Amino acid sequence: MNSFLNVEDLGDLQQALAEATEIKNDRFKYVEKGRNKTALLVFFNNSLRTRLSTQKAAQNLGMNVIVLDVNAGAWKLETERGVIMDSDKSEHLLEAIPVMGSYCDIIGIRSFAGLTNREYDYAETVYNQFVKYSGRPVFAMETATVHPLQAFADLITINEYSKKIQNAGRPVKVVLTWAPHPKPLPQAVPNSFAQWMMAASKPASALQTGIDFVITHPEGYELDPVFTKGARIEYDQMKAFEGAHFVYAKNWSCPGISRPDAYGRVLNDYQEMLDWTVSDRQMAVTDNAGFMHCLPVRRNMIVTDSVIEAPTSLVIPEAANREISATVVLKRMLDSLK
Ligand code: CP
Image (cartoon, rainbow, N blue to C red):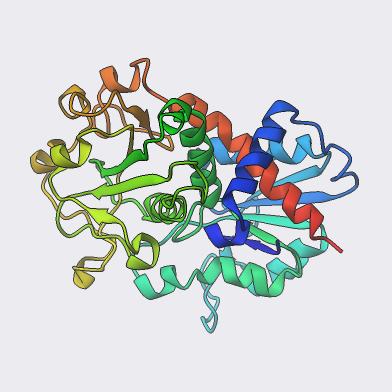
């Protein structure tokens, strides 16, 4: 695996889930695999979980780890080609990338969407320059449009917590719900979550009984069909929640599909947004659903205290599974090194 951006990059999901279970049972099983290999983790944006879990994953595999916070201590990087570099950006990505590649064996990139130019964001311009110029396998630690390490951890979590439903021969109902946030956020997490849930929707593609996947959001927030193709959209949040086994809450700004003029913007007013906060009212119509969120989460905006603190809240085991998803992905990348 030379690049990890989309669900297809991982191949067979049942096999990937089996590997995740194997690693969870013995995190250091492959500790020799990464001996004398170095992972470079490049952060253009803040992180808690991705930073810690990916470092831990690399250490599980015996790798050395270098973490670079581009905006704290490094030269400010210009990412666009053709600009006259007379601003505060001292170095161009096109020199910086091959230099970074010369110090490591595998590179992870966190680089969020700018949310001003949809074409630039959805072309994955920064990530693809690392693929092209680093000479190393590259993996996404949340890029402009996707967050696959998160989505893989989410799938691992849903598989673990749905055994009873699967054993009863019932499809697992998963609802992705838009939820309020004071600032416009990228679409990377919901894009990946939708992509991975659709890949797991057919019985035996990942989970024994498959996934019945529903997305709910206010009108105007339609995600890019590249990620949601075949997914059911339900604009009535209460209807969407009926009988759900898992509720996955996330905010995202306008993806610019039904409203190209509004890409990256928040479309609704404050009061209207707060109707979408996940509370006991919506959770009451689910089938005792597990509550999921990638974190960090804004309490009483995205979700009420009572829902996130309930015994059905899965946010902590979900975050813990980030170590497992990253270990599987890094192991696969080490396997593909020449
Ligand atoms: N879920 C997630 O990616 O968390 P961080 O932004 O803290 O890495």
